[in-house]
Length: 123
Image 1 (tube, rainbow, N blue to C red):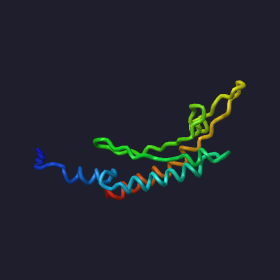
Image 2 (image 1 turned 180 degrees about the vertical axis):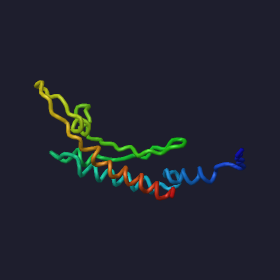
Image 3 (image 1 turned 45 degrees about the horizontal axis):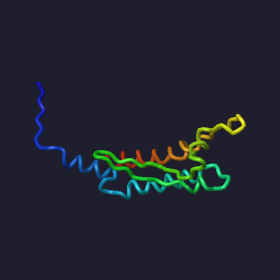
Image 4 (image 1 turned 90 degrees about the vertical axis):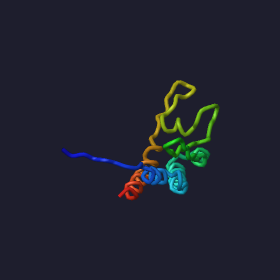
């Protein structure tokens, strides 16, 4: 029979993972937030440029997690323009303007970089 006994706690491991999530190292998440804003701005379809220049980000910290939330403040008549560019929208005359998936391809490389950096840190 094999028996495992553990004494102590996981304070060091928890501390390390918290730092990795950006709790103790804000520049980790800030770096990727800025990269995401740049990527989204570059990928946004441009007519006037207002939507492309309206990207921002927030770092949302909760008890055990941290998230980067990308925002776009270009709103016209209560409608977020970045969203209707992404998903499409109806016209006032009954037509439909097809959306263009520009958000996901812009941020996917950023997510991949976050994952790769996290994996390097864990190894």
